[in-house]
Length: 151
Figure 1 (cartoon, rainbow, N blue to C red):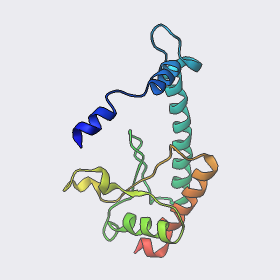
Figure 2: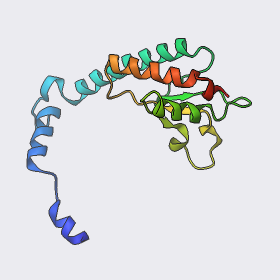
Figure 3: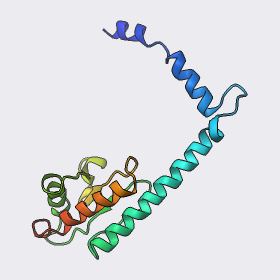
Figure 4: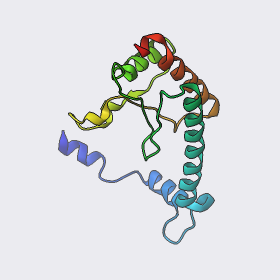
């Protein structure tokens, strides 16, 4: 099977190579709309606007209950004081089951045994427009502030 598979994809498709060459720019050819760097700049701007919107919604919707880590990740570390370590897990379950939205628990993004993962949620923003992001944030806020999540 391994040899058969290797024979099927010795290199990427010529069509894909041509598209990448045209978009990114290669062989002395200028990329479309500014090439890869311009594409990356536009993406950074869009993601920064989405992140700022999400931060604003969560900080105002769950006062004192959410701390946003503005590093390369978009995690929502929820304070892990006495009786609150399970709040993100409960909130994520409520968000999925009752409010129809989902996010990942932070523990899936840390090494096993790393105590840093407690009290975190990871929220994806790259594929959501402003309306969908606002709707998802409102659902997450409802789940995190529900009495079942705060026990």
